[in-house]
Amino acid sequence: MLLDLERFYQACNPSRPLIIGNASDRRYYIDFAAVRGGKIIEALQRTIARISPDTPTCQLFTGHLGCGKSTELLRLKAELEAQQFHVVYFESTHVLEMADVDVTDILLAIAGQVSESLEAMKIRLKPTYFTKLFGEIVDFLQTPIDLGVEAELSVGIAKITAKTKESPQLRRRLRDYLEPRTANILQSINQELLERANKELKTRGKKGLVVIVDNLDRVAIRPLPSGRSLPEYLFIQRGEQLRKLNCHVVYTIPLALTFSNDSAELQHRLGGGVAPKVLPMIPVRLRSGEIFPQGLAMLRQMVLARAFPDILPSDRLGLITEVFDSLETLDRLCLISGGHVRDLLGLLFDCLREQDPPFERECVDLVIRRQRDYRANAIDPHEWELIFQVVQQQRVRGDIEYHTLLRSLFVFEYRDHQGAWFAVNPVLAETEKFKSWLNDTHKQI
Image (tube, rainbow, N blue to C red; front, side):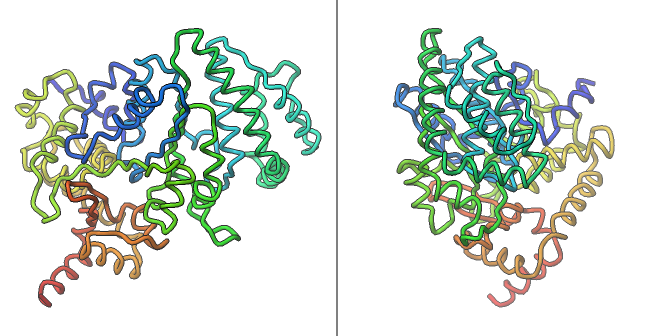
């Protein structure tokens, strides 16, 4: 048997993005640009490396949770590094409190991650403003934080962040203290950290500094006392401050913001006039509902590459029966995923937990039914009505209630030559509720 079961299981882990910089991960990567409706990562990379290498850029990137954004951003990192840029990539979920985040938190997180990355290269920059600020913070909070006299900037930020992460009350007090100083913090990050970092990197043969802030699209969509939601406040109201960093920045933002009534304001304030790049689903069907052969063929390859990474794509198709009892069973899995990468891997992962390959049709159907019931349990009657509207119109309106549909993966976004269109998550199309609605609709026609 050619299939290495343990390696296959690890490769199907839905929570782990592919690190394209690693040769072992690169074998699993499939470039879906041909069917996704545009070369999205190439556009981000071209803007930095080709059009504006010496002038800072701020670019926005979005898409459904789990549609492959992190993998694509890690590919962007690898490509920019190959062109001699110094790239700092970090997952904001690891350093920020996503339910309670402000602009100063994001700026400090970026400063901390950049400093840590530079310190690893023996580039030590000591912004005097921060040394003074840290001392004032410790006095103001009246809580013991041992910053040490010679503490690196990244260490200072990490210690203060760790202390405030434990206590929402402490976090609020720190934020109240930092908020009026945002302009000074930004100025210090730019002049004492980023500008000096860029100069130092260029003496070492680098073309410049790029910061990729991943997972920022996961900030909680909660209303603030002002009436705006937290993402609207961060990315629209305060967007101009986030784009003022003196280096290339790529931010991931919530997909729902692109449907907001303020999407034009977002484009101008944070995007500098440029709309966010959207990573849509991989289409397995056309708008008409017919199967899209090219998209389906690429998803088959994605599944088979996880099983046989070292075998040529043309030869993998001959090995389908090592993993599934038939091509139809593999296609069933690909079609039910709706082209959502993490869902497809999750279904595969679940099959592996049930039995050894080749997976039988009954096993795949069992896993799909479980997924269907789990997703459908969360949908209330009002949300069902919204889903039915989306199916009829193939579009999503900008109201806040539609955020839930997108964020909960009840509906998926696709792109084709006519533009964006939306469809129900195929797993929900198999519920009795959806089938009876479809039946009633057809009777009326």
